[in-house]
Image (tube, rainbow, N blue to C red):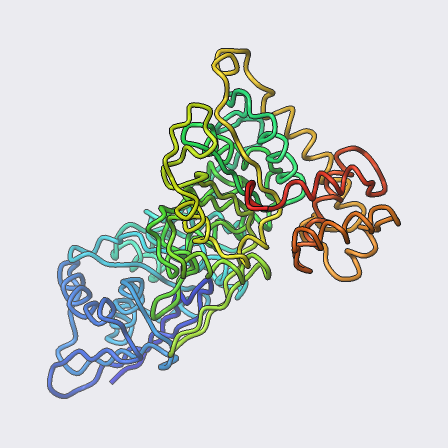
Length: 500
């Protein structure tokens, strides 16, 4: 009779929680029991582990084998426990020593031949292991991702036999090297110079980037709405090391392999309009991050906004306001970060040609109203900037290129530096006393805001967002105080044209 313990990690939301894999080998009728709230994929590891051990030349114990995944009330999913279970059985049966297992954690899926296959969320496991002061052994296929943690010791293995040699002290596993990260952010995935005309759209895109404001683009098909939206991430400053690691960990937890070449880049997510509310906000029995979390520190682009389901759009209200959301299920509750910029695009009517100079629109007024009513007032209340984009003239399309992204980003960075030095956050995040202190309105500005709010029916939230946008416009004009012209432009940027 023998008992062994191997350390591992279970993925729960964005956290990699510690799991002790306890293996017991004793007398009695042959059997292999796996307990500790394992999911189906984990229960199937019994057959994978047995076949892998026999294929690699090890003896499978001819007696009662019990493996416990502790804590018992923590759900375990996936094949990440194959490697620690195999090591536990080998140590408990006396085929491997216990030496060194207390300071090392193991994750990895086994094939029937003993090869190690990549797992999801290896970066999250590496971050958690480093904080616990332990080394981590991962499959070679996901070692580059795990090494992005930059802290702790990550070792890579491609076969069960190599892990066994490492535990025996005969041949240590190679240490995973942190992949090279981009040193310069001078390259642009898509340049703003490719967008011809649309001066108003470019102006509001720059203001959105400078202040972190949400943006809605309205116009007929082919006017450049999507082109503008896809060029927004390159106007934003690169992420600092902490934020870049957080973005990479979110992608890893969602099961997406993170490319080291994207280190420091703002994420850009563009889900199809058929996406459900669970796809946007996250969910599942063991909640996983959704699109709003994958867009954390970046941009969430919703094309054809009215075509999204009403529940899906309404699920955006809390993350837009709070910068995070909590997904609650019967057996679990997870809180995910969701501080993103929302950029949406829509046609002015179902056919898309309302207001077109060619007069091609045949939609009645009732049809147009029903189409726009798919977007609720509370959601529109959370959008700071709305721009109508008419069809550009032919001479604009054949004219010289517009201003490049590099020049626009310089202005955006300058405005962001001013706001960060003054208040420590972007203008879009101002609230409470910080808002009153940094968005002071003079007598004339107060009168203008009060009259406009009465005439346009602006809510308290909408008035607050108008002041934030006016602060960004004033910063763009290098003005210390908000003037009437800044407030007037901010008011002109609200609402869907034609609704008033």
